[in-house]
Length: 116
Image 1 (cartoon, rainbow, N blue to C red):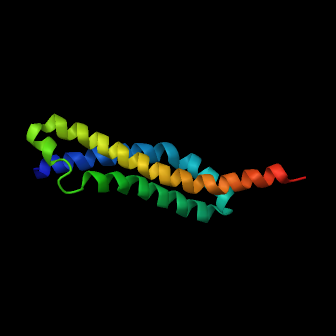
Image 2: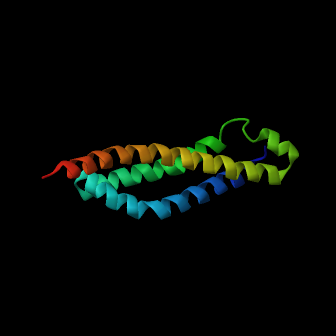
Image 3: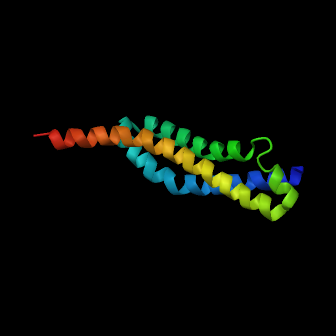
């Protein structure tokens, strides 16, 4: 795969990931303030989650040989697979992050249900 195609694949991955981060960062931070107790902690975990959402798809599309078969077919196939693998990486990162946030929220909700 040529360097130009690789740069295009990384650009697709970054753009999709940054869109997800832009949509989720503010609501996530608001939720994390409740969970973490301070704005500084919530800010750290929001940034941590944002980095995870950006790096996960980059890692997936950068796997050696992943897009080589598509490169023999043509640029359109490479770009289609790049979008697919980028979205798969974002979804995987969001699932991990969602589970990590869901656990304390569920515990907090359970505690509120039991309060007198």
